[in-house]
Amino acid sequence: SRLNPAFTLEGMTVGMAPMRRTPVPRLGGLLPRILALVALCRGALWSLSSAYVAPEGTMPRRQVIAVAAQVALPSTVAFAGDRDRASMILNARRKYLPRVLGGYKQLKADGKVTDAFIEETLPRFVKALDLWGSIQRLEEAPDKTSKRLMKEAKAIGVALKARNYEEAMETLETYRKDIPAGPGEFAWTDES
Image (cartoon, rainbow, N blue to C red; front, side, top):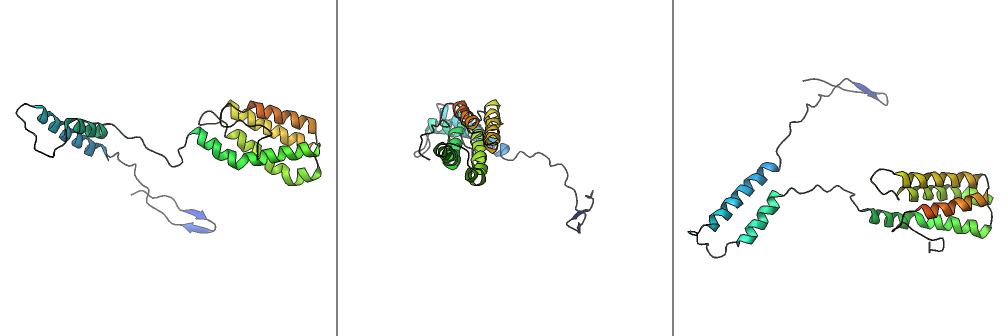
């Protein structure tokens, strides 16, 4: 058996462990499915012959075919965390949108970028904008929509750090308009 070389982990030498060989693919659930399908089809074909008289309490032909179809069709694997886009956006809406709306309303009420806003609110505000923009992707991987929104969130942070209130408010409005139609849309007047 081949051995892994020893390696050091925080000052301790971890011993040599046997390497695993490449696993051999197994039929797993395929063979039992095939056997069950053959048995069900054989029984269904036998029940179609004119010489066969079904005993009482047996399954009708439709049920046999339905069970055979379930056995024959492969089931899809469900991954933990599989959700549709709308549920992910609604979950993010509860988490990030109150920060976004709260920061915007504070800026609007103050009419300028204050020291208190930069010290207390700015980091969480920009992070919420970034994460809200990231979840707006239309595909599994980040796409041009989410990348544009994340870029705008960074531009908003830069404008606010430079205390450029007008540029920040214009970019915030552009950011809001660039959100794709659907559950991610919002208005500045929404409840936070």
